[in-house]
Length: 481
Image 1 (cartoon, rainbow, N blue to C red):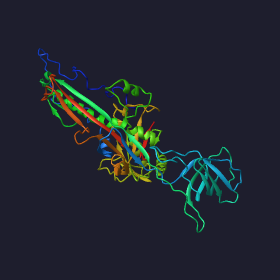
Image 2 (image 1 turned 120 degrees about the horizontal axis):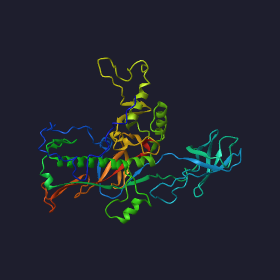
Image 3 (image 1 turned 45 degrees about the vertical axis):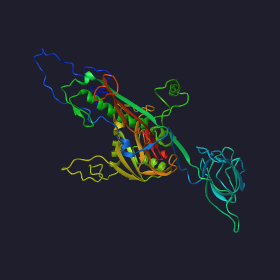
Image 4 (image 1 turned 90 degrees about the vertical axis):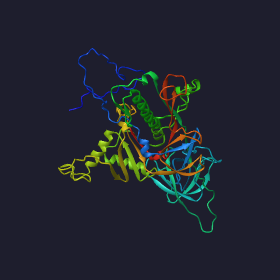
């Protein structure tokens, strides 16, 4: 039987901007002879409602004193081009190739940047992109401005697949020189990829009038951070704080930059209060510079073999953590269970005896398939008021999981001016010797102990200015529809 749609789960927010009968006691009918029995403490029917935990598990926080955060990431060590063409005749012993996929590294650089990184005397291998042919040759001449190079083939018959429409992949595997000759002509300069991100300012506020602060309720209230008591406004204040804590994380996950010509870009010019230029959140960066599994999530070892094959072509990080929603978690459990020889006739798979005297464990926390993969549930992807409530159809924004490399990496910090060890994911917040904007909170008004204005209320303000840095995004995997 399937789960019935009604009754379901509530999505209506419990927080309102005005006092209502749902958040204040309004039944003061003393003429009613049947007084109800009441429980003094409210029941926590949704358990722990906060979703912030992801960045605390995988990242770190460190200060920054600029509106712009920049860092450099290493490029490839070896040279390979995948879009080379030639007009050479068939069976010719020599050929001239044109490189069409020269990339100009970002961040600017010396003159000649964007020229081909091939030199005379280097030995290269050619492979027809459609398959069926490969050759080895030595470079005899290079024209960096025209992005062409000439080669002499090692095989006697020369190239036999010449066609103007053919595209070739070429990579350098060594060099060869005669005895007593001069050294290699020219040298190669290392080129880094420069990335940047900008912090965003996140705010929230809770306000309560002095009169309402004098009202003591008859229901004991509590929140996830342990605050409790009979003052209802304190519950609202604590929930505002918890909600702000969640937004500090979800903003770093979901933030996107404002594109030129967008409504936010126009708003930035017309409004001096809200909006700025956005920021590059984790999902945005992985979509742009990382790896994306577009079919929901992998369900078989063959699917994971495809993932491992892609990771081999990236940083080959040995240990990785997959943060998953419930469906993806069950899929991994089922996939691993079928690998056990006893899976068909019992439940003794994994490292568990699963005898009748113990609880049956049907889940896995890690496995090794080329690399070590650790599985962890991500509450954000399960919460129905967040991404957990999105439909599974293509284009809906449904995310099933995120693979994050474990450990740290070395990058060149543009602010520090030196190499530094950084977690692959970390948050930079604005701070200086006199101002720390990691997590600011202050009280204004004339109630609740505050004496900053003549406003007969207490206002609790929250502010943070931060950005997330996703280093080595090519090692991340996003699983989405």
